[in-house]
Image (cartoon, helix red, strand yellow):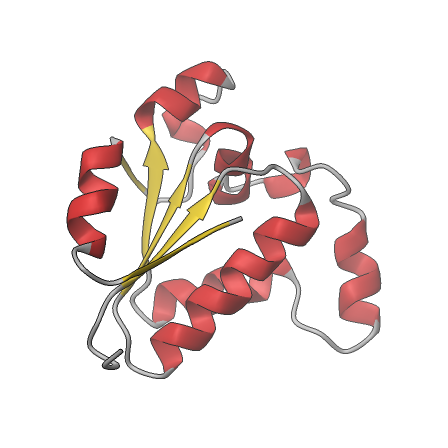
Length: 127
């Protein structure tokens, strides 16, 4: 797989561990020059909210940072700076009753077709 092939990350879980991993993968791939789209749906959309404390086990972030590992805030910031495309599923927002106004300013709201088109023939991961 060439480094120019897109990486699509599908975040369907609202747990801190999976959201953290999604942002680690997104920032890592983008740092290597790959185009990345992180598509969150359902409870995963909480990871794209300005206040992500609605994630299950959000308190885990303090322990992660205490061990010298970047937390979700730092990872999200890095992902945005590296050009990761953040997309919240319109249906997923509705299902979990998350208002689009609660999302980070850089997050676009779109459907699954947008995600699939952005991934093209590239690699997809689901968390």
